[in-house]
Amino acid sequence: MSKTSTRTAAALVLEDGRVLRGEAFGATGSSFGEVVFCTAMTGYQETLTDPSYHRQIVVATAPQIGNTGWNDEDDESDRIWVSGYVVRDPARIVSNWRATGSLDDALVAQGVVGISGVDTRSLTRHIRERGAMRAGVFSGDAIADTDAMVVRVLESPKMLGADLAGQVTTAATYVVPAVGERRFRVAALDLGIKSNTPRMLAARGIETHVLPSTSTLDDLLAVEADGVFLSNGPGDPATADHAVGLTKAVLERRIPLFGICFGNQILGRALGRGTYKLRYGHRGVNIPVIDVATGAVAITAQNHGFALEGEPGERFDTPFGAATVSHYCPNDGCVEGVRALDVPAFSVQYHPEAAAGPHDAATLFDEFVTLMAESSRDAVPPRTHRPGAGVPHDRDGGR
Image 1: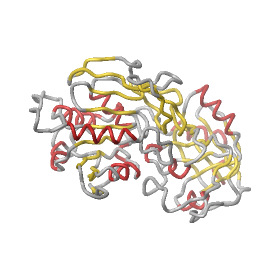
Image 2 (image 1 turned 90 degrees about the vertical axis):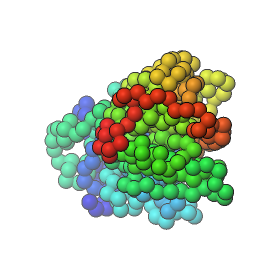
Image 3 (image 1 turned 180 degrees about the horizontal axis):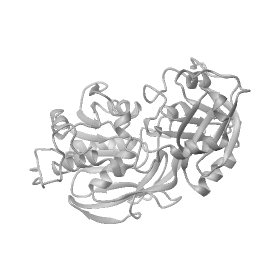
Image 4 (image 1 turned 30 degrees about the horizontal axis):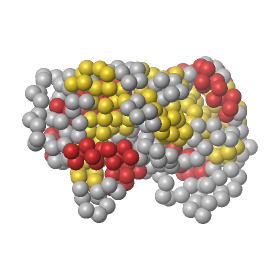
């Protein structure tokens, strides 16, 4: 792949046959994924490097993208994860003292195929009406045959049923030390974790051990953690049987647990709830969420195309006692959080680490600290292990 001039033709092809023409932005070639739109007006670098966007072609609804360029500090992982990027008007000049290059330079360097000059307003309306779907970004010689492009899109894999966490997880455990005196130790299951999460935990005196998604119960217990964190991540939560089994084992041992985004869906499945695919998902940094218990509204950062089944405020029985749907989105009633009432566990569908903001939900990390402070693994004997409820102790178990 190579950098192109703005005169190089490009096309975005949707699986329903719609074709949008524009100019190449970033690398040239072809790339495939699920086309989704993100309503954030800022934070494009954090979006592009969020592992939760793996195998997605992201449409930026903000009309101009790239004004602040690219810097060496705001990456949420070690690479760009999106399959493609669709923008209307890329900035011609980078204007920020922290910039070390342009957005276009970063896309080229990492081989990310993009397209500019697209009517993103019309495209967003199309996705809202028809739903997120497979798509392909093509530029250069790849756009010669429209019918062939549609065929290639239809041959690409769907997001429904996609098991992707294993493709974005860390290869080996690593540790992020606490800032100042260590108060707690947390085992974080990396399903696609963002860099800002361990930083938020570290600021609260937490030493975070980030574990691969394939970790076993023995691996987790070896950390001797005061709490367990389930991270965000990509793909269909219905495929994450290993993570669900591990979560059940944690709940049985009454280890304090906190999950976000994909982790919310994992905890929900462990509590017996099903999941389903949203029509077009929630992606942006301006999405309201209501806390059922208090009625408080938080403006949140989100990126999810799947959700838990349930109704706002619903109380339900689980193998671990009672639980409740603790948060919901007033836009569509979507479940945005669950809480176990008889074991120390809760989760939310949104991002309290929220780089690049908002920060309304940052206090959830403080709630996790309080949960660990009030809980003791040795204070209450672990629940009796039920056959099939835990996780096999071999590396391949449950995958």
